[in-house]
Image 1 (cartoon, rainbow, N blue to C red):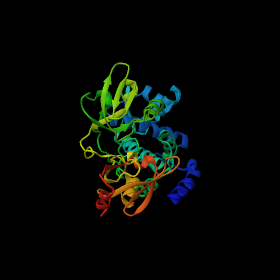
Image 2 (tube, rainbow, N blue to C red):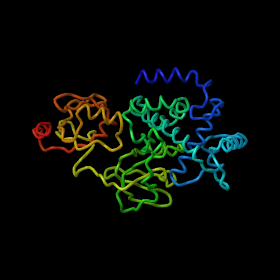
Image 3 (cartoon, rainbow, N blue to C red):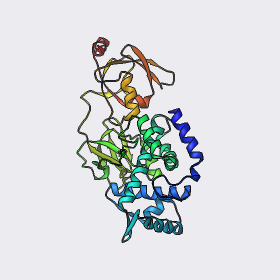
Image 4 (cartoon, rainbow, N blue to C red):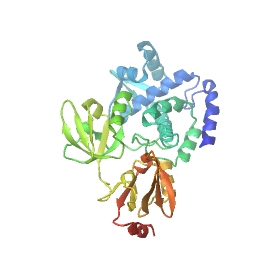
Length: 338
Protein backbone atom coordinates (compact mmCIF):
# COMPACT_ATOMS: atom_id res chain seq x y z
CA UNK A 1 0.00 0.00 0.00
CA UNK A 2 2.92 2.38 0.63
CA UNK A 3 4.12 1.99 -2.96
CA UNK A 4 0.61 2.64 -4.23
CA UNK A 5 0.35 5.93 -2.36
CA UNK A 6 3.79 7.02 -3.47
CA UNK A 7 2.49 6.65 -7.01
CA UNK A 8 -0.60 8.69 -6.13
CA UNK A 9 1.51 11.43 -4.55
CA UNK A 10 3.74 11.67 -7.60
CA UNK A 11 0.78 11.83 -9.99
CA UNK A 12 -0.97 14.43 -7.85
CA UNK A 13 1.97 16.82 -8.24
CA UNK A 14 1.20 17.08 -11.92
CA UNK A 15 -2.58 17.02 -11.61
CA UNK A 16 -3.02 20.66 -12.61
CA UNK A 17 -1.48 19.94 -16.00
CA UNK A 18 -3.53 16.85 -16.77
CA UNK A 19 -6.64 16.63 -18.89
CA UNK A 20 -9.74 15.24 -17.21
CA UNK A 21 -9.10 11.51 -17.38
CA UNK A 22 -12.77 10.64 -17.74
CA UNK A 23 -13.10 12.20 -21.17
CA UNK A 24 -13.66 15.95 -20.70
CA UNK A 25 -10.44 17.58 -21.99
CA UNK A 26 -9.00 20.98 -21.39
CA UNK A 27 -10.42 21.83 -17.98
CA UNK A 28 -8.51 23.11 -14.98
CA UNK A 29 -8.25 21.08 -11.79
CA UNK A 30 -10.76 23.39 -10.10
CA UNK A 31 -13.35 23.13 -12.86
CA UNK A 32 -12.75 19.40 -13.14
CA UNK A 33 -13.44 18.99 -9.42
CA UNK A 34 -16.62 21.10 -9.66
CA UNK A 35 -17.79 19.09 -12.65
CA UNK A 36 -17.22 15.73 -10.99
CA UNK A 37 -18.71 16.86 -7.68
CA UNK A 38 -21.86 18.04 -9.46
CA UNK A 39 -22.23 14.75 -11.34
CA UNK A 40 -21.63 12.76 -8.16
CA UNK A 41 -24.27 14.79 -6.30
CA UNK A 42 -26.86 14.17 -9.01
CA UNK A 43 -25.98 10.46 -9.09
CA UNK A 44 -26.34 10.07 -5.31
CA UNK A 45 -29.80 11.64 -5.44
CA UNK A 46 -30.95 9.63 -8.46
CA UNK A 47 -29.71 6.43 -6.84
CA UNK A 48 -32.16 7.09 -4.00
CA UNK A 49 -34.99 7.98 -6.40
CA UNK A 50 -34.72 11.77 -6.11
CA UNK A 51 -33.75 14.60 -8.45
CA UNK A 52 -31.17 17.32 -8.09
CA UNK A 53 -32.07 20.98 -8.28
CA UNK A 54 -30.29 24.30 -8.49
CA UNK A 55 -30.69 24.68 -4.72
CA UNK A 56 -29.44 21.18 -3.89
CA UNK A 57 -26.40 21.60 -6.14
CA UNK A 58 -25.62 25.01 -4.68
CA UNK A 59 -25.80 23.63 -1.16
CA UNK A 60 -23.71 20.56 -1.91
CA UNK A 61 -21.01 22.32 -3.94
CA UNK A 62 -21.05 25.58 -1.92
CA UNK A 63 -20.89 27.70 -5.07
CA UNK A 64 -22.27 31.16 -5.74
CA UNK A 65 -25.33 31.38 -7.99
CA UNK A 66 -23.27 32.91 -10.78
CA UNK A 67 -20.62 30.18 -10.65
CA UNK A 68 -23.25 27.46 -10.48
CA UNK A 69 -25.11 28.87 -13.50
CA UNK A 70 -21.89 28.75 -15.53
CA UNK A 71 -21.16 25.20 -14.33
CA UNK A 72 -24.62 23.91 -15.24
CA UNK A 73 -24.43 25.56 -18.66
CA UNK A 74 -21.08 23.84 -19.23
CA UNK A 75 -22.45 20.45 -18.12
CA UNK A 76 -25.37 20.79 -20.53
CA UNK A 77 -23.10 21.85 -23.40
CA UNK A 78 -20.95 18.77 -22.78
CA UNK A 79 -24.00 16.51 -22.85
CA UNK A 80 -23.60 15.36 -19.24
CA UNK A 81 -26.73 16.93 -17.72
CA UNK A 82 -30.17 17.92 -19.00
CA UNK A 83 -32.68 20.27 -17.41
CA UNK A 84 -36.12 18.87 -16.57
CA UNK A 85 -38.25 21.79 -15.40
CA UNK A 86 -36.71 23.01 -12.15
CA UNK A 87 -34.64 19.84 -11.83
CA UNK A 88 -31.51 18.43 -13.43
CA UNK A 89 -30.76 14.84 -14.34
CA UNK A 90 -27.80 12.95 -15.71
CA UNK A 91 -27.54 11.87 -19.32
CA UNK A 92 -26.10 8.38 -20.02
CA UNK A 93 -22.66 9.98 -20.53
CA UNK A 94 -23.04 11.97 -17.33
CA UNK A 95 -24.02 8.87 -15.40
CA UNK A 96 -21.03 6.97 -16.77
CA UNK A 97 -18.66 9.66 -15.53
CA UNK A 98 -20.49 9.92 -12.21
CA UNK A 99 -20.22 6.19 -11.54
CA UNK A 100 -16.45 6.32 -12.00
CA UNK A 101 -16.15 9.28 -9.63
CA UNK A 102 -18.33 7.50 -7.07
CA UNK A 103 -16.19 4.38 -7.40
CA UNK A 104 -12.99 6.31 -6.76
CA UNK A 105 -14.54 8.16 -3.81
CA UNK A 106 -15.88 5.08 -2.06
CA UNK A 107 -12.71 3.05 -2.55
CA UNK A 108 -10.72 5.93 -1.09
CA UNK A 109 -13.05 6.06 1.91
CA UNK A 110 -12.53 2.32 2.38
CA UNK A 111 -8.76 2.82 2.30
CA UNK A 112 -8.72 5.79 4.67
CA UNK A 113 -10.97 3.97 7.17
CA UNK A 114 -9.32 0.54 7.06
CA UNK A 115 -5.68 1.25 6.31
CA UNK A 116 -4.99 4.87 7.26
CA UNK A 117 -7.25 4.45 10.33
CA UNK A 118 -8.71 7.94 9.99
CA UNK A 119 -11.82 8.73 12.08
CA UNK A 120 -15.04 8.02 10.19
CA UNK A 121 -15.96 11.68 10.40
CA UNK A 122 -12.81 12.64 8.50
CA UNK A 123 -12.68 10.17 5.62
CA UNK A 124 -15.30 11.82 3.41
CA UNK A 125 -13.48 15.13 3.17
CA UNK A 126 -10.12 13.53 2.45
CA UNK A 127 -11.62 11.26 -0.21
CA UNK A 128 -13.34 14.28 -1.78
CA UNK A 129 -9.97 15.92 -2.35
CA UNK A 130 -8.19 12.82 -3.65
CA UNK A 131 -10.86 11.37 -5.94
CA UNK A 132 -10.21 13.91 -8.71
CA UNK A 133 -6.54 12.98 -9.10
CA UNK A 134 -6.81 9.21 -9.73
CA UNK A 135 -6.59 7.62 -13.17
CA UNK A 136 -8.71 4.55 -14.01
CA UNK A 137 -5.61 2.36 -13.63
CA UNK A 138 -4.92 3.76 -10.18
CA UNK A 139 -8.53 3.18 -9.12
CA UNK A 140 -8.29 -0.43 -10.33
CA UNK A 141 -5.02 -0.86 -8.41
CA UNK A 142 -6.61 0.53 -5.26
CA UNK A 143 -9.59 -1.83 -5.60
CA UNK A 144 -7.28 -4.83 -6.01
CA UNK A 145 -5.11 -3.85 -3.04
CA UNK A 146 -8.21 -3.62 -0.84
CA UNK A 147 -9.53 -7.00 -1.99
CA UNK A 148 -12.28 -5.55 -4.22
CA UNK A 149 -14.59 -4.44 -1.38
CA UNK A 150 -18.33 -4.31 -2.06
CA UNK A 151 -19.24 -1.59 0.44
CA UNK A 152 -17.72 1.65 1.65
CA UNK A 153 -17.51 2.42 5.40
CA UNK A 154 -20.92 4.11 5.29
CA UNK A 155 -22.58 1.01 3.83
CA UNK A 156 -22.87 2.33 0.26
CA UNK A 157 -22.18 -0.18 -2.54
CA UNK A 158 -19.02 0.42 -4.56
CA UNK A 159 -19.45 0.35 -8.36
CA UNK A 160 -17.38 -2.30 -10.10
CA UNK A 161 -14.86 -1.61 -12.86
CA UNK A 162 -17.67 -1.35 -15.42
CA UNK A 163 -19.65 1.04 -13.24
CA UNK A 164 -22.27 -1.54 -12.28
CA UNK A 165 -23.78 -0.99 -8.85
CA UNK A 166 -26.41 -2.90 -6.89
CA UNK A 167 -29.77 -1.11 -6.44
CA UNK A 168 -30.76 0.19 -2.98
CA UNK A 169 -32.65 -2.28 -0.82
CA UNK A 170 -32.92 -0.18 2.33
CA UNK A 171 -35.10 2.64 3.60
CA UNK A 172 -34.71 5.58 6.01
CA UNK A 173 -35.37 4.48 9.57
CA UNK A 174 -37.95 7.29 9.80
CA UNK A 175 -40.12 5.22 7.42
CA UNK A 176 -39.40 1.89 9.14
CA UNK A 177 -42.21 0.01 11.01
CA UNK A 178 -41.84 0.43 14.76
CA UNK A 179 -42.38 -3.25 15.51
CA UNK A 180 -39.82 -4.59 13.01
CA UNK A 181 -36.16 -5.33 13.66
CA UNK A 182 -33.78 -3.90 11.07
CA UNK A 183 -30.09 -3.89 10.32
CA UNK A 184 -28.35 -0.55 9.77
CA UNK A 185 -27.09 -0.64 6.20
CA UNK A 186 -26.10 2.95 5.47
CA UNK A 187 -25.24 6.12 7.36
CA UNK A 188 -25.49 9.13 5.08
CA UNK A 189 -22.45 11.39 5.51
CA UNK A 190 -24.06 14.53 4.09
CA UNK A 191 -24.67 16.96 5.67
CA UNK A 192 -21.57 16.59 7.87
CA UNK A 193 -23.30 17.98 10.97
CA UNK A 194 -26.01 15.31 10.86
CA UNK A 195 -23.42 12.60 10.28
CA UNK A 196 -21.38 13.85 13.25
CA UNK A 197 -24.47 13.57 15.47
CA UNK A 198 -25.08 10.00 14.28
CA UNK A 199 -21.49 9.02 15.04
CA UNK A 200 -21.65 10.76 18.43
CA UNK A 201 -24.64 8.61 19.34
CA UNK A 202 -22.59 5.51 18.58
CA UNK A 203 -24.57 4.11 15.66
CA UNK A 204 -22.61 2.08 13.11
CA UNK A 205 -23.27 0.07 9.97
CA UNK A 206 -24.24 -3.52 10.75
CA UNK A 207 -26.05 -2.86 14.02
CA UNK A 208 -29.41 -4.55 14.55
CA UNK A 209 -31.94 -2.07 15.93
CA UNK A 210 -35.62 -1.41 16.46
CA UNK A 211 -37.61 1.75 17.07
CA UNK A 212 -38.71 2.16 20.69
CA UNK A 213 -40.04 5.71 20.42
CA UNK A 214 -41.05 7.93 17.52
CA UNK A 215 -42.42 11.44 17.95
CA UNK A 216 -42.24 14.71 16.03
CA UNK A 217 -39.33 15.70 18.25
CA UNK A 218 -37.19 12.57 18.43
CA UNK A 219 -36.72 9.01 17.30
CA UNK A 220 -35.20 6.49 19.70
CA UNK A 221 -33.53 3.31 18.48
CA UNK A 222 -32.40 0.37 20.61
CA UNK A 223 -30.01 -2.49 19.91
CA UNK A 224 -31.18 -4.36 23.01
CA UNK A 225 -28.55 -2.83 25.28
CA UNK A 226 -28.19 0.82 24.32
CA UNK A 227 -30.56 3.52 23.13
CA UNK A 228 -29.78 6.05 20.40
CA UNK A 229 -31.72 9.32 20.37
CA UNK A 230 -31.89 11.38 17.19
CA UNK A 231 -33.93 14.27 15.86
CA UNK A 232 -36.15 13.07 12.98
CA UNK A 233 -34.20 15.19 10.46
CA UNK A 234 -31.00 13.46 11.56
CA UNK A 235 -32.57 10.00 11.79
CA UNK A 236 -33.60 10.31 8.13
CA UNK A 237 -29.90 9.80 7.31
CA UNK A 238 -29.93 6.34 8.92
CA UNK A 239 -30.99 3.58 6.52
CA UNK A 240 -32.07 0.08 7.52
CA UNK A 241 -33.06 -3.17 5.80
CA UNK A 242 -34.64 -6.42 7.03
CA UNK A 243 -32.29 -8.23 9.40
CA UNK A 244 -32.53 -11.52 7.52
CA UNK A 245 -29.11 -12.80 8.52
CA UNK A 246 -29.02 -12.21 12.24
CA UNK A 247 -26.19 -13.87 14.12
CA UNK A 248 -26.88 -17.17 15.84
CA UNK A 249 -28.61 -16.95 19.25
CA UNK A 250 -26.18 -16.06 22.00
CA UNK A 251 -23.63 -14.42 19.70
CA UNK A 252 -21.92 -11.25 20.92
CA UNK A 253 -19.19 -8.95 19.71
CA UNK A 254 -15.66 -10.14 20.44
CA UNK A 255 -15.02 -6.72 21.99
CA UNK A 256 -17.68 -7.55 24.61
CA UNK A 257 -16.25 -10.97 25.52
CA UNK A 258 -15.10 -10.94 29.18
CA UNK A 259 -11.44 -11.58 29.96
CA UNK A 260 -10.72 -15.30 30.29
CA UNK A 261 -14.06 -16.34 28.75
CA UNK A 262 -13.71 -19.01 26.08
CA UNK A 263 -15.76 -18.64 22.91
CA UNK A 264 -16.01 -19.74 19.30
CA UNK A 265 -16.14 -17.54 16.23
CA UNK A 266 -19.60 -17.40 14.67
CA UNK A 267 -19.00 -15.03 11.75
CA UNK A 268 -17.53 -11.73 10.67
CA UNK A 269 -19.86 -8.76 10.57
CA UNK A 270 -21.26 -8.06 7.10
CA UNK A 271 -19.93 -4.50 7.34
CA UNK A 272 -16.39 -5.91 7.42
CA UNK A 273 -15.37 -6.07 3.77
CA UNK A 274 -12.38 -6.23 1.47
CA UNK A 275 -8.85 -6.19 2.84
CA UNK A 276 -9.97 -6.02 6.49
CA UNK A 277 -12.15 -9.11 6.11
CA UNK A 278 -9.44 -11.05 4.28
CA UNK A 279 -6.83 -10.13 6.89
CA UNK A 280 -9.02 -11.31 9.79
CA UNK A 281 -9.68 -14.59 8.01
CA UNK A 282 -5.95 -15.03 7.32
CA UNK A 283 -5.33 -14.56 11.05
CA UNK A 284 -7.67 -17.47 11.79
CA UNK A 285 -10.95 -15.68 12.54
CA UNK A 286 -13.12 -18.22 10.73
CA UNK A 287 -16.35 -19.92 11.77
CA UNK A 288 -15.84 -22.41 14.60
CA UNK A 289 -12.38 -21.23 15.65
CA UNK A 290 -11.84 -21.26 19.41
CA UNK A 291 -10.84 -17.93 20.92
CA UNK A 292 -10.20 -16.39 24.34
CA UNK A 293 -9.11 -12.93 25.52
CA UNK A 294 -5.58 -13.45 26.82
CA UNK A 295 -4.13 -10.03 27.60
CA UNK A 296 -5.63 -6.64 28.37
CA UNK A 297 -3.42 -3.59 28.02
CA UNK A 298 -3.51 -0.83 30.63
CA UNK A 299 -5.61 1.35 28.33
CA UNK A 300 -7.80 -1.59 27.25
CA UNK A 301 -7.10 -1.07 23.56
CA UNK A 302 -5.68 -3.00 21.79
CA UNK A 303 -6.43 -6.37 23.36
CA UNK A 304 -4.69 -9.71 22.73
CA UNK A 305 -6.67 -12.86 21.92
CA UNK A 306 -5.51 -16.46 21.79
CA UNK A 307 -6.73 -18.15 18.61
CA UNK A 308 -5.46 -21.24 16.79
CA UNK A 309 -2.43 -21.49 19.07
CA UNK A 310 -1.18 -17.92 18.69
CA UNK A 311 -1.75 -14.45 20.14
CA UNK A 312 -3.36 -11.80 17.95
CA UNK A 313 -3.81 -8.16 19.01
CA UNK A 314 -6.94 -6.36 17.79
CA UNK A 315 -8.22 -2.86 18.36
CA UNK A 316 -11.73 -2.58 19.75
CA UNK A 317 -13.18 -1.43 16.44
CA UNK A 318 -11.68 -4.54 14.80
CA UNK A 319 -12.92 -6.83 17.57
CA UNK A 320 -16.45 -5.47 17.12
CA UNK A 321 -16.42 -6.90 13.60
CA UNK A 322 -16.05 -10.46 14.97
CA UNK A 323 -19.15 -12.19 16.35
CA UNK A 324 -18.53 -15.00 18.83
CA UNK A 325 -20.57 -17.38 20.98
CA UNK A 326 -19.34 -17.81 24.58
CA UNK A 327 -18.60 -21.40 25.60
CA UNK A 328 -19.21 -22.99 28.97
CA UNK A 329 -15.57 -23.93 29.59
CA UNK A 330 -12.13 -23.19 28.27
CA UNK A 331 -11.94 -26.82 27.23
CA UNK A 332 -14.79 -26.14 24.84
CA UNK A 333 -12.68 -23.55 23.08
CA UNK A 334 -9.88 -26.05 22.65
CA UNK A 335 -12.30 -28.51 21.07
CA UNK A 336 -13.72 -25.82 18.78
CA UNK A 337 -10.25 -24.92 17.59
CA UNK A 338 -9.47 -28.50 16.50
